[in-house]
Length: 164
Ligand code: HEM
Image 1 (spheres, rainbow, N blue to C red):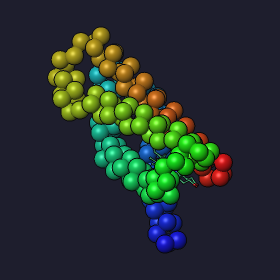
Image 2: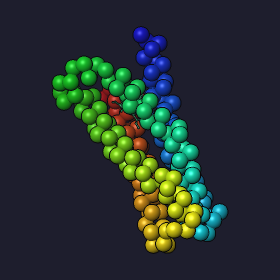
Image 3: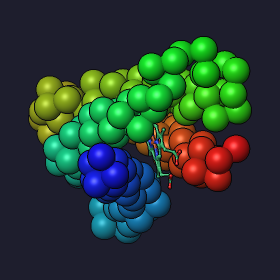
């Protein structure tokens, strides 16, 4: 049982590293770097969308693993739900779950924005520069929310770990 718990926590940690590390890399390293590579908004957006879609191939399984292994880690509380509101640990876990729900909603909107139809419309020049700018601002804003919420989730994980 101890080995199984350790393996599941390991999966949780690996998935958290992929999810948080990958989102931060895209937001902090790649996005600013693109400005120095291409002057056209279309070009930058097309690359960002491609990178985002490629990243999603590992990000989506990581998020699913985080949710499944997170539920396993919380099995004692799910078995006795009154603990969610009567202990500090339970309350922090409730905050963590709410943040994860916010993350999933933000991510779902993000995925919808970067679907292949959008990429085709950008590449065939069907979007006006005003629409392109709007799309770019939305993608940047959703990326920032994803990073901030992910880091906040890590803080709740630290609180849980400290045995609050
Ligand atoms: C983006 C999503 C998530 C991230 C980045 C994340 C991150 C982490 C990290 C880094 C730890 C390790 C803390 C330690 O050293 O103990 C952890 C532990 C844990 N996580 Fe998550 N997690 C996520 C989602 C979830 C979900 C959805 C749940 C519950 C439904 C959950 C429940 C837990 C629990 C109960 C622990 C054990 C804390 C302890 O008592 O030590 N996590 N999480």
